[in-house]
Image 1 (cartoon, rainbow, N blue to C red):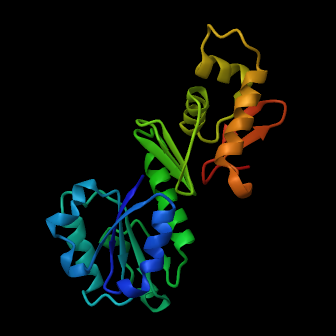
Image 2 (cartoon, rainbow, N blue to C red; image 1 turned 60 degrees about the vertical axis):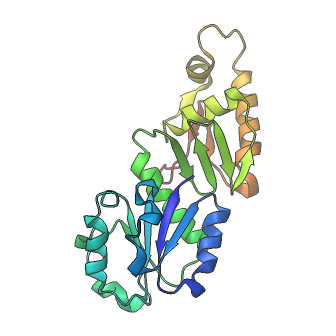
Image 3 (cartoon, one colour; image 1 turned 45 degrees about the horizontal axis):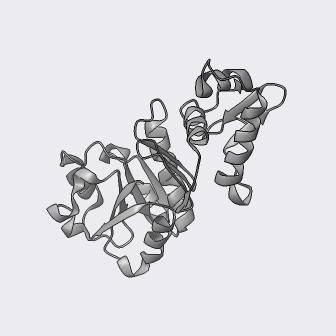
Length: 228
């Protein structure tokens, strides 16, 4: 689960965005701009910063620089929500990771935040993984899809974890048997097919695709920028 600090002076009109993030397994702490440095928000436990500039009274560059001066916040991705009129005044020298133009749907915001966290961890995911509605906690052996827990067997989880940590790379059934089941496994390659089928039924609802079959070769995990 990724933790977002959402800073806005216009919370009445941004509640739907918070609800959408919560539905997609984010944890959200909210703050007005003047409260952002309050210790109650525990910035050391935050993964992402989302700042709504639509009605922000503080000079935008000063606000972003103030956030980045905080030791616990300076390395975190900073995402701005801006209006069309504000686009021409944005400066990536403020430490911005990304921006979205308002109005924006909660789904679009959640997908973008998931992508940023995936990109941040894609070389060597440590504690978990998130993409779209799929959230995987490697330490707790937990999987959520669209905010709902998914029950995987141990081997299903290990197979999913192995594929996630090698996005875009195609593995034969024989290699997957070796890497996930080990040399002492005497079952056939059909075991891999069965586990892939079960995984897909559990993590790919509504036509979403995370695992791709490469005909006559094997399987690969589809990251956001993996060619299909």
